[in-house]
Image: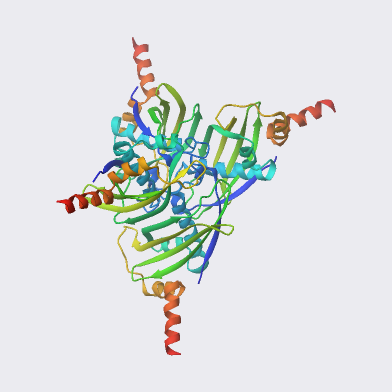
Length: 147
Length: 147
Length: 147
Length: 147
């Protein structure tokens, strides 16, 4: 599984009057992590942008397990969960030391600069599928069945 | 169904380089709407806070259907979906005119000012259940069975 | 003096762990107010954008006098302070009831969609100068001198 | 001069529909930088907080010289400009490679957890003055006069 982990030090401006990170900020942490994943495993997101594409977010799910506070170090681990013809999903786990703070999933559709849905060009789809958890599982499965 | 609708005019600072509202901002719209729902149907959220309580967000789900842009008027409708012993869920629908922009769900646990989980005091639970979609359904069902 | 006042109800997500509105949010309040000023006294900002212009912010000054908290109603009053060949300045006063929470100033340069500085087209400059505090003062001054 | 420089990689969510970092975000960059300055040269900000203090922001000034875009690396350099009996000021310079993006100043008052102004305890004032640009200049001046 191709994962990337970024470490985010909680700035004061992300806290709220409960004294903890406001829950809406976690959606932003996910974005920082998936951009880092692309850098490490695929292509920098700005290369997609330069080619006229965006991965528009179509779904966010997040389960909050524990809170984080100012100056905490939050490690956000992300991976490519699945890839379809015009969309993909990323999974996330957030930890502070060994404590899981939250888990999340985001789905994204490929769009052009006018926001129109696009199918993933075949070379991108093949490459991304090879990097994905379920693509990799399916591949291993097939190997197994032929064995 | 007790719903509240707030109208949000998209400020420029909520847009991103795709020219549309950045997806993380919608989680904030949900908060504005549920605070307004409490004002209209339950008690102002700050009364809960003054009594030492917070409804900590434990889950967010959001499906993005269409994008919104600077100066758009987004109507966020919210309702109380269900109530349990120490938690509740709110549902949301976001529209621009007749177009659905997105739908969402948030779950919240009652916590004290130190962030410890609390059971809903019985009077709050009863009142909130009466305001909820599923509480109301169950109540109607019972009435039906006794009829 | 052509002023516009918007009322902003402080959402929870704008508070920080000091229990008050995080200071960076006020810069956003100023933007909401000046867009409303344009609607009321000049032209909607999105008309400028549709014509290929933006008023890029080149300077922000803000003095914080008092804090605001969750659910406070903050009234932001704004006016056009001065207009020059390619720039203008807006002034701001923020109040909660009769208490001044802060005062601010922003400066803006007219730019095209590629971010290049533009001179204000003469019709805009004349109209905006007529709406500005110092333009108005100068005009009154002239009237005075001719009297 | 005791400076600290943090490198901030611009996330997508900080951009706006002009395609550049929204100007309000820079105020947040300043906060990240001054917290890092305290870590490096003074005491971690959370130690002040644990002792019941906050440095409440009382003034922000920022001049925007150039824009930054998604994925740019922005280096924020900060220093302690001056220290008075109950307040201090930090200066900032933001660069992308050799280009100055902006310069800023923030002023802060020491407050307790209820937001009341406090005088700087003498040991903090002396230490901070020694770290400040103007404190240091004055000290050098004195040395000069004795020479």
